[in-house]
Length: 185
Image (cartoon, rainbow, N blue to C red; front, top):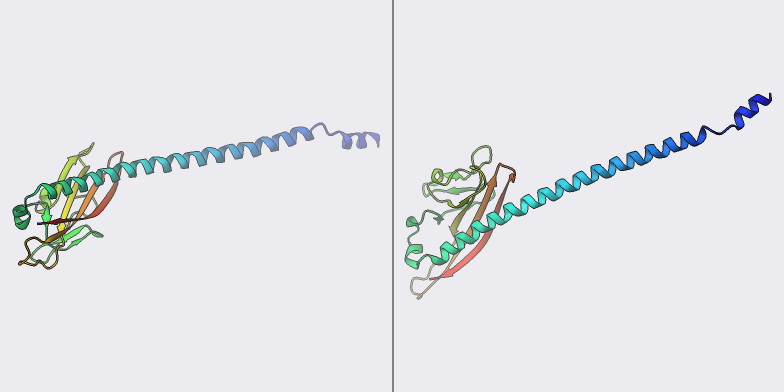
């Protein structure tokens, strides 16, 4: 009988079990912290890529605004002479424009990649190629001027400028930036 009570009072293995439980809990916490850190690193990387692509699309908008500013009023009056300026409907949500015949032409193919500028009748201006053959900053300028008073010495002309950046490489992603631009001539 004394040997049975002695075995029950012997608690030498309890410390080992408690230590193993604490080690298991700390291991689970460590793995959770590593997983959280990996997710945070991926979020930061995606944010950096988006910002870089956004700045490239913004550069396309600025280049288009600069070309508008440097164009003479006689050049801007005759839209047919400028391949990157359109005065028709442009659907920024679906990235397509309406031709004078009334048909809609998309600036993207079925997979969502941008069509090269010559394939869309030259209405897309290309700023600069990116790091790969699939990436380029492009822009479209849409004249949105309403009624023009022909008796006034000058009129305010309104434009919508869309800058695009698309890349399928390491900086994968598509960004569209739109600004309004007005010029009196």
